[in-house]
Amino acid sequence: MKNQQPSRAQISRTSLQRLYIAMRHLFTRGSYKPLGVSGEAMIDAMKSLEPEIYGSMNDPERVELSGLLYIFQRLPQGIEDCRYIKLISREGFESSDFEALIPSKRRRNCYRIDEEQMFVEMTRGRSDIYDILTHLTFMYMEAEKIRRNSLDSRNRPKRAWTMLEKVIHKLEKGEDYDEKVAITYLSTILGRDYIETSKACKEFMISDKVNDIFRITYGLGRLSMDEHIKDIDREISFSSGLREKLGHHIYGELWANNIHQFLYEKDLLDRPIHIISANMHSVMNAFFAQTALGNKVKADNIEELARILSQYENKAYRDKVEAYALKNGMYQLDDQSGTNISVQVFDCATIELDSIAKSIFKNKKVPSSDAVILVMDYAFGEQAFETMDELLKPLEIDDKRIKLQVESINIMGKAGILEGGKGDIMIATAHVFEGTTDNYPFDNVLSKADFKNCGLNVYEGPMISVLGTSLQNRDILRYFLNSSWNAIGLEMEGAHYQKAIQSAAKIRKNIREDVKLRYAYYASDNPLETGGTLASGSLGMDGVKSTYLITTEMLKGILDTK
Image (cartoon, rainbow, N blue to C red; front, side, top):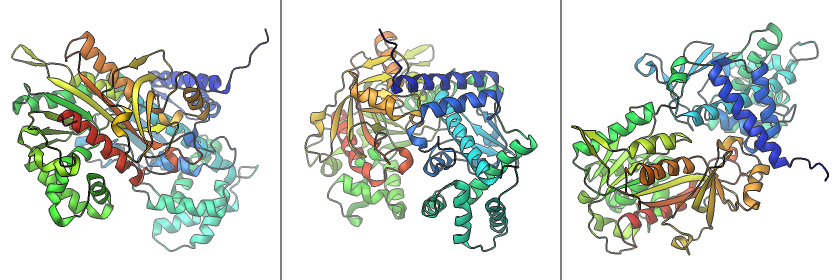
């Protein structure tokens, strides 16, 4: 038999395993240099893996601009200037005078300690650490390209770099500069043409909490040059507190205890509880938006109303809906534990359910209900297990164990779709955990038939729970799509949620064994399409219809109107 060469998908899976082994090793060790031996091992694994979201990462000259924008929307503003980056747990900085820097697309508290050092708070588990380490590895790879494009063979700055320095000095002094000329020099350093660079300048400029591309390029290049020429190393480290606390559910336990205490104080523990993992607006809007706004906003249905509320300039409308909701049966529990997962509690016994019939249930009679709906904001990766595991545990009060009367658990999430486009709907029949032999089949109360004639493509099948969305490549994804797995999409939390639910229902008996499960996802991107990854831009209004279709179906089941 001839020796068979490994397939591209097998090579990619091996690279992914190497990358995670390297990250776990570095975390245990406590620190590493991004361009040291350990850092280079991570870089080599990333290059072999070729994640789709990082685009032209392996090109030796062309800086990947969409990938850079993607990571800087998830990293603290100014991190490109920091030589030392330290990942910490919650260690008291939230009570200090340091300003908390929170990235626009990732809920993390970060603190700029001085000109050279940034602390980044990690309270959402291993997935959060893997996420930021891959972003940082990519950042350093692009920094090396900037350095190579800016120095000659004798390590002397090229004219383009010298001119960029002058632009930076003018920016710091608030002086005017010739933008067209500056973009011309910048395009040389980035290895991109003028049009590509000009487009990137605009995209970085309008991005919230992200520095402009001139400052980012200069910051990355300057630190790379210092290490290459002056041997001044960059370093990533992990605090002892972070290494001690990781994996012990410290933040999830505090979070769940706060919720349990609230339910106890409001005398809601003996009521049927329905848990929804979703955003913080769709259930609130479905219940209250039409009544709160009355005739001020004309909309034929909840989706149209949601589009109006989603527009940036309509903050006053959103505030009015929230204020009305808080007076009419909704409670808001803002997180203080460190999980960054807010919670809303809806007491259906105090909500005039008939008033929502027109917007949600097409005038169908809504029966009265004593249900309590607990909506938790999105978890992140492994954090889904920690939070759900702790939430489903009984309360211990006065030497008594009080179990929650959980009737249903409803998971609505964003996910990458493997066959279809942005905004389409995926109904999960199982979760397959990438990189392991773990798989979690379950009976989903929702089905494809619930969304017939909805005007969107709807897919039904297994979902892949990945270790990190930013590390997926086409070879692995095509394997899951075209092999006997028949996967329809990828996300990060499903297997973790189901692991906690099955444990609570079937092993620990903390909740009823026949708890109803509803899993549905709307497509945020298609990583198999060129220009279809998360780095290509936000979902925008494409997700409004699918979000509210899923929300409506979940509420119909909870309120028994189907």
